[in-house]
Length: 131
Image (cartoon, rainbow, N blue to C red; front, top):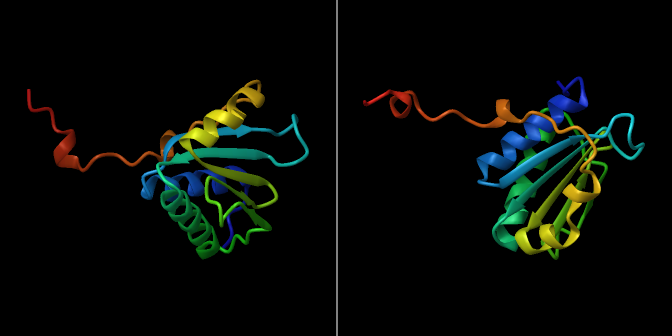
């Protein structure tokens, strides 16, 4: 069953990215600011292979939930892959491309989405206070 709203898609996409060890995840709520999408998710991979793996994981995770992608760009170059789902757009960068394009500065006025529900907790044994 497809996710009912764009924020759920952003959370699921961020979980898939984290599962592939993406870092520096940021999501912007663009509702009321831009007509191009409701949310942007931005994350970084270490190499072009890593960026592709993150993109593949996001695409597979959302497809399993019945969410189909409208458009994909940059997959062959894999220094900036854009996954367009209509209401959410995912940007997956290598570090140098992310710094160069600096989307955080461009969209810095947009509210950020709390992705803390996307961050997996460590196993229970690792959370025990050993003090």
